[in-house]
Amino acid sequence: MKLYFCLLVTLVFQACTKDVQSPSTIDVVHLAGIVANPSGKTVASYWKDGVYARLTKTDSASEVDCMAVSGSNVWIGGWDWSLLPNTAVVWKNGEQVSFNCPGEIYATAAQGSDLYETHFDNTNRCWVYSKNGVATAIADTALSIQPTGIALQGNDVFISGGSLVSSGTHSVQHAEYWKNGMLLFRDARDTRALGLAVDKTHVYLCGFFIDQADSSLKACYWKDDELIALKTEGLYSIAFSIFVNEDVYVAGYDGQKAVYWKNGIPTALTDGATPASANSIAVKGSDVHIGGHENYYPVYWKNGEKQTIDNQNTKGQIKVVVVQ
Image (cartoon, rainbow, N blue to C red; front, side, top):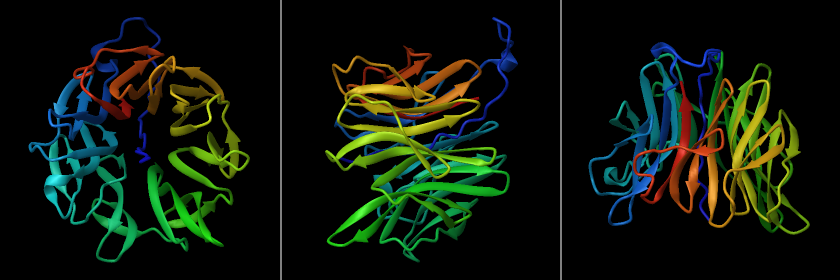
């Protein structure tokens, strides 16, 4: 099963206390994800306040993995098969900027007009993060690594991900995070970090651990180096996205249900009759915004209620939500 990862980067402003918002304080909801074209290929897609825009101009398959928003700029990272062999791409305000590398752009973050992203450097055969195209290698001693998220705190760049480390006759994956390219944390257990948030002096990860008793996947999050298991019911559960203010919000799935957790307490968004997932979460004021899928159709929930968006009846999913 391929896991799709994405990083949530959200600018949080103080909530308006009046019932009616002035035009300058109305929230703008950015969604990025995929829909299927008539031939069944995935199409990189973007929604602004529910209005759809296709990111590619060809019938080749394309994918979205991440999004960053700063001011009036929207950067969306992923891949476009029409650009073979160098398929990694960032769309800035809908315009394609190709990268001279294979694979995809796995994570993006923005600070002012600066764009940070992670990708695999095919020339030097290593993972890097870059600021406006200037790359820094991500150091690690593992057999292989894969970044999954990026977050900024002042001048520091934090990256989440996982590694494969040889353990006797097999390899074990480990949740990790790096600061400015240097490894700071590797969980000793069979774990994976899929999302990242930085709040003041604390680093939060989310993902899953392997329960050695039954080999099941269990959703969890980390505060610094402490693993905190989330309350789940299904044999398989995964946390994809984490958002932290005074509270800790995590989004993912439990069994077939799309679920989010607030301070460890789960709220199911679907009934489990069909497969569903909450892929990304953002909180602004008292509103909880979540993007994902239900039965592989794109869904955007606000405070637990489905909202109307374009192409919601076309196969696909929301991968990232950012609220301004």
